[in-house]
Image (cartoon, rainbow, N blue to C red):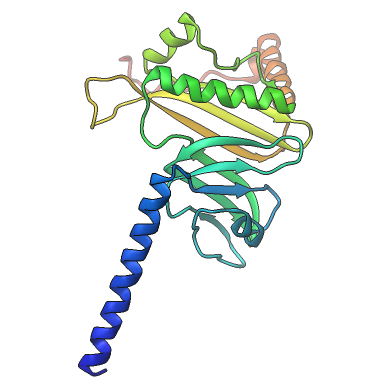
Length: 236
């Protein structure tokens, strides 16, 4: 390659970088968020056509995870159960070959203050209620609410609040909210939201019944569950 061609190549690369930067800045100024439109059971190609966010290249013949190349909100595609999230920085889509089989994301750009985190969680739950999703597993995991009891529980930072939602016989969602140590804001209480979506596998109510049956069996027949062997360590 001669010097002239090398300079042309460098110039074209620089022009491409400047164009992409200008496009991103213009998008931010116009207030348009990048969006990933995802349908569980849909294809990679369909997702790309519907979405404004750039995305990982397709990997055929494998179970794999892809990510958007920029902060993007989720538009969950379903004629009955669809909903939209805020923009996310952590956002993965699971594929079986080129077919979408799950989503895992944190619908936020950074760890949030508790008031802001609760707004996101409650908005998602309100959208689900409106679209016909139903909370499930309430015996063990009640839906998250903005109450003094929930705020006190979350501020302890010991466990995350977690709840499950079900969309007919099609999907289930797990939504969690927990305290997060944010090194950039060490004096503030910050929180992370986690959202997972997939096709319905074992209904949560059925899982709860199994847990209750197992606990009842152990109470009635403790001999079927022998005590663990001693390790010789009496300390706690």
